[in-house]
Each structure stands twice: as C-alpha cells, then as structure tokens.
Image 1 (cartoon, rainbow, N blue to C red):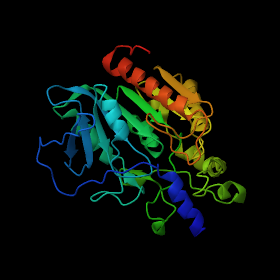
Image 2 (image 1 turned 90 degrees about the vertical axis):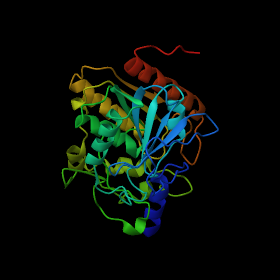
Image 3 (image 1 turned 120 degrees about the horizontal axis):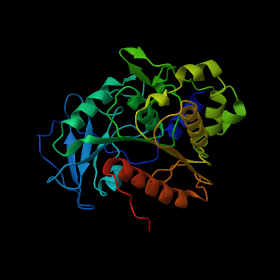
Image 4 (image 1 turned 60 degrees about the horizontal axis):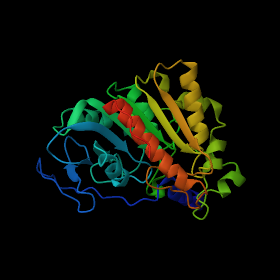
Length: 325
C-alpha cells in the first residue's frame, strides 16, 4: 500500500515546474518583468493569499482570470503567461503546498478563494465586471465548484475536469488520511475516496505508466459516495467550457466531463455549455500534456485546447470572436 500511495502521489501531481512562493511580503506596486515575454509579474501576498498576478502591462485594466492548478501545489505560471499575453490579467493562485497555506490538498477552505475573488475585484489591473475562472485537473473541481457559491464569474473553464469532489491529496504521503480535499464554513465537503481494492486497476497506477485512470473509474463505482460528492454545476450562472482528452491516463476526465454536460442538459442550463473531448489525447492543457506516455493526438489536442479556450474567453469577456488561422 505504501508503494502504491507513493505512485499515486506522482500521478496526481502534474509534471510541471512549481514556482515556489516567497515568504516575505512584497511592497504594493513592486513588479518583476520577465525577459521572456515582457509580462509583468506582481507578487500577491495579501490577506493570507499567495499567488502571482500576471498582466501585459501596468497602464490599463484587463479582464481578470483566476487560474487554479492541480495536484502539484504551489504557483504555476506557464499557462497563466500564455493567457495573459492575449490581453488578460491572470491571478495564478496557490492554495496548498507553500508557506502560509495548507501543506496538502486536505480540507482547503473555499473561503480562501472567496478572498481571492474579492482581491481581484479591487485590483487596479483588473476590470471587475469581467471575471473568469480556469482550473486544470484537481483545480477543475474548484473551477466548477466556486461559481456555485460565488456569483462573480462571466465564464468558467475546466480542463481535464471532474464532476465530483475527490479525497485529499498529499505532497508527502506519509501524512495520508482519508479526508476531503475541500471544506466550506468549517465543514468538510462530501468526497469520493480512492478505492484500491481492484488490484488490476491499481497496479497500473505506478510511476512508470502514470495510469491511474482505471483506479479512479473503479472508485466511481461507490454510488452513494459519488452521489453525495457531485458538484451542483446547474447552479452556475455563467457559460461553461470543458476540455479533455479521451485517452487521459491520469484520470477519466473525458467521461467525467460528459457527466457534467449530462447534468447541465438535464437542468436545462440557460448558458453556452460546451465540451471538447480530443481523440487519442491525454491529460492536456494549453501548453503541454502530462501523461507519462505520450498519445498520438496530444499535439493536436494542445493546439485545439488553446484555440477553444481563447475563443471562449474572447466571446464572454471581450465580446468578440478570435479569428481562426
């Protein structure tokens, strides 16, 4: 079991570089200018928040995007820079795994993200009337859950999505416990626990193959736990975009995305809701895919995900269509 949990830790963490949050407070208005893209990086260390605001320049306001990463923890700026370069102010927010925040993704309070939304609405760099949330992998849970509580978003994007709240995730699996990943108003949210009882499914969940998808599918057979942990996406008062790969080996994001769409359709959700599921593609985002074994369709999926994401943001935050190449 110990070996298996170590492997799960590898799989659940996206294989991207984490920018470690600094513990010191940065004076307001002080910015760093990266030489690569010319974007401004503004450290955010206010009211308990830990993140980096990325803007094209400091002379105007931009539509604001709350960017939420996955199981890697910390601050991730790669795709945030890609989006910001298109004319957006992107808050890459850490929510665990750095000083001042929970060490692991265990019962992280949703109120923390409420503070981030309030901060964005008061930022001189952000047009508070045009806000979106983007989450990938474990962050997709938050991207779909937060708008059911905070009615501040004009667009919602979940990449490699989940339709339920999952069990806690640990950067150090010596601290493993069967707890919820999220909490609200002091109470742990209902969650789906990992079920390792299927030895064949769990055996694939190792550091070599990076294939936990079957373990997750087996865990979803816990019908009552799933029912209790469903995200009430029909409460979202904004258009929703889901992006997934049908060959995702990390978890069954395409199938879970279909379940989100089924729930929205059943509720007759009165907004634009779309799910683009890419054939022969894995656990992908706008810059890369994260599966240990590459799928043949990954390159096309990354290009498609980026195009669909930017089109969607333009339609709902800037009211104009991005021309296709």
